[in-house]
Image (cartoon, rainbow, N blue to C red):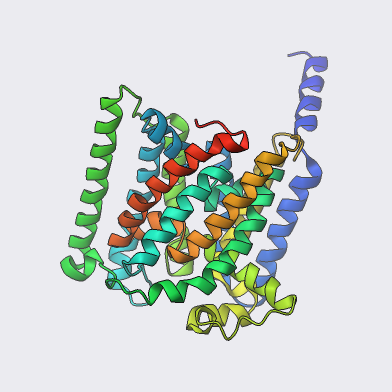
Length: 382
């Protein structure tokens, strides 16, 4: 390559790289890590770095739960769904036995009842209108999407409303959590969990074949699924529980509401030990928030390193309306359903908890409704 060609290539690379936002992402991450290390929280630094890696992995692999579920429901394509199961299987290898054998670790477990089903169903509608889920909203905002910034704002608002409604739905009753390791021990529970994932994969492949659709995960979903699964294990090791996204949103919304003069401390949800502690302590002590911040800045760094940041035009008003409605529904649904597709589905199944599969089965019909509503907002059904 000639000197002139090399210089032109370097100039093109410089144009593609957005130094301002890359520096902002790296600098913000470094500040967060410094703050938690000064507070003698090395595991919190690990959570931030784990989230940072997740942001890069999701953005670079274009790993979308929302799009892959939509492609399965509309066309029968199953590669994306199977990529998601790779994440769960890798995560389960660590979560099920460790949570059963080591008291300081816990799985993602939840009761089975109306709140779980209603929350997952509502979340499914919202994720298709918003065109993103809990993790998808975060990494696309980090990647520079103005539309998903609207989704995130209303996601946070909806989460607070969901926290106020959750105790009422729980009062309707339901069954206690069902955890495989409680019945089969740590290794039997792991075996049962992996068998359930394999059975789900076989069923998904059968549906794809019946519709003459592709069921082989793309290279991005294969590699991305492995990397994301391993990073989920890192987050689990650092935080003591499976990766959670949306509780952080709820905490942000509650702190904003408190700053605006609303007193949430008398609400039943905010009197429970975990939420009560999160409401009064710094967001830097909330494991979900730390991972969220890391993911946001990781995606921003990955996006800024390859192109000018946030240069896309804003979408039409109808699309922004769908983003807002979708965010509200996802926020409320995530709290009622004990998490999103990450905290409830991925974390739940990877913990060997029955509620994870029930969440998935309740979210799918919600997705179908959301898909049917998309054209009303100028969005494609596929």
